[in-house]
Length: 112
Length: 112
Image (tube, rainbow over all chains, first blue to last red; front, side):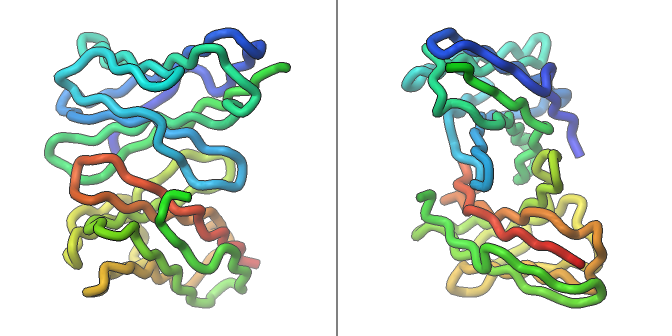
């Protein structure tokens, strides 16, 4: 499968601080990227997505940045809350394929 | 609630047995994806269907098979089960291809 990896497997932040989760991808033919959040015992939940013709997209407290030059994706969470504690996955979808390739995830722990 | 329903939630079975996991996609979604998630691992893509037709295949073992029925629900069949098949199996659905997918809560399979 394609290589979609994360720079850090774990991240701990203080409540109220901003969090940045990074993701590297290997295929420049990737067209679409999604960040998912997975809480313990639950299925992945869609957070935000971005297409390859954009370099930034903002949601509620979250921002995704895409740097196609270095094949890097990041998720920024503003004012991190305890409820943000989860594993975050980036997923990459190729133009020519239909499957979503996921990295191994980053575990975010928010310290109250 | 994502709208994707998976049954059963938990399944315990012995090695060598066969099981069927069921997925009902969100209303209106034509595409169904199956993923396997082993302990502390990322999501491994297995197979994808679109409107009853197989569209993409990942690292799915020959002992595993799937299908999507005319009513768009899907089943994943796992046979000759081995201890290493113990994992969470997720189904996701999307309205089309190359768009965001919504995940079910998963089926936790334990092979003893």
